[in-house]
Length: 85
Length: 153
Image (cartoon, rainbow over all chains, first blue to last red; front, side, top):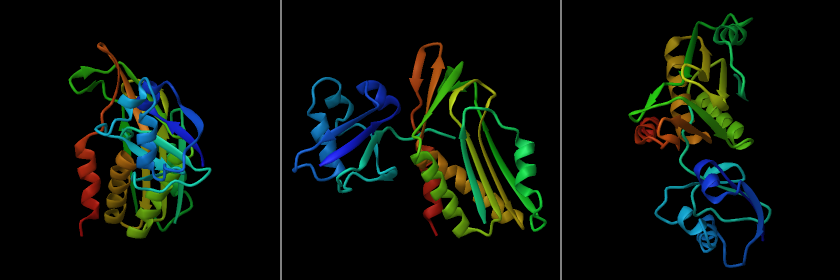
């Protein structure tokens, strides 16, 4: 399955990446699985995506919870709690 | 009911926006406006300026969902949200919400609802410049509480 990843604000800065296209293994079925999968990368990834970090996620540009199931071609974004207004 | 959403770097003219929103609509008896501006202090530090980042595409969708929800809850005629992004200085205008209705009660409630949801559901992030360096603003627990009260019946 292929996904388009987006990262914003402090997450984007800490990872040094704003977007990337990836192929994920069959075992990665939800956004929570994806977060664990990405946190296994070396460098900043394990710290930035660690389970104790408060993160929000979006699936195809809608804020969702991490139990949301992934679909081929989806856009998945990770970002900190929002601070607009 | 009609609504419009604008995300822009440039400043806006509050009076002109209000005039345009209610022009030619004699049903309107109430116009409620919220204007958010940049403060020069936050969390005990002086703020020299800030940069607002957003998630193009999702921002517009999230704001539209908030306005659609407001329209189902209250009798409204028109709604406008303008949110600035990019570099901003203290005293600058950041966000404008304007709601028109026949009576003030509906317009007041809808305007507050829109701002409370915008604060927790619209993908904007502030990065402040302070004498101690640049820092991302932390989300406030009070903002979550402000949104949550709209779900209580």
